[in-house]
Figure: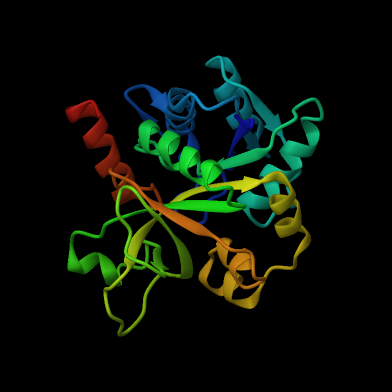
Length: 247
């Protein structure tokens, strides 16, 4: 089985919710919730990559592994690549990029997704989930992915586009994009060597750099649709779910 190294990019200076990695739920910081979920997926070693000493201290004081990177990175993808280059003794075949604001990510979804991408010998993959409410199609905080074919729990399909909002479109093959990527290490290296595209910068969607440079991204369907924490309202929702339902 190919070696997978999970790296979680995290920083304090998020534009919409500064300091969110260290906001606490059940007495545990958000970044440590994500770290624990990554460990539960049981697919390989897990590291957090950050530019902030406060995050490093939070992770390591809770028994986790963390790497301090430079402060110049424009995206999480660039940050995890630097972290990977610092781990010179790790011979990973694939890098799993798990977003640091997804404390509800389902470990089983992560495990099954990784297995599908690797068994299909694909260079890059991501996760999606069904959109249940019509209102979410126009919610700019929810990133959408459009795939070539309809997704089910057994197949995978090529991603055609990623976007936040469109004034008019059909709902066919449009899903909620979940912030997780699996790349072959050479593909990650290629992506970070490319310049940011105008569309990537405008929409704040780093996956568009790969897509617009003909790197094929395939998507699998997750059984659970996690809530990413981008705003105070998201934080309150996730906090309530974890504290009352023990998800």
